[in-house]
Length: 174
Image 1 (cartoon, rainbow, N blue to C red):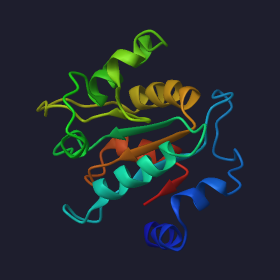
Image 2: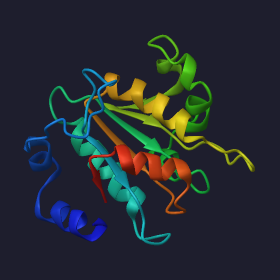
Image 3: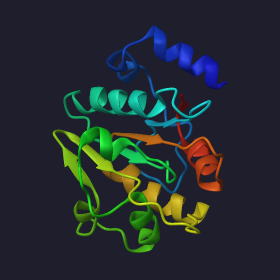
């Protein structure tokens, strides 16, 4: 499945993918007015360029008129998104997950970093022993999917429980 979706992306530009008919068949009933344009990026092995691909597709979507885009770095072991964007955000995807029950329109702007038109939630510093629970991911995505038109999630490839949850919710996996 992962290879066939990757082949799909090689055949079309990000803008062409955006223009496709994205019916809300993957949108659960408790996410009214939520986007179903969520893409997860899972590397086959470290160093193959998955984070670079996630960043470039996210930037392409963010440049589409009227498409508010979020890139989340769930590679908690060695996330590179903040490094590639040369940002120094004090908060991370872990902070957002830990505060997932309290997320609202007032807290959210303090957690994300804006780089041009792209909103970024970096992986942050490594926190040994820190575990993100699938319930926290569901709450975080429930909030984010109501705020954004497109969400891209860069995963570590270690198949953590939260990564599996993200792929279950995601529209396409690269």
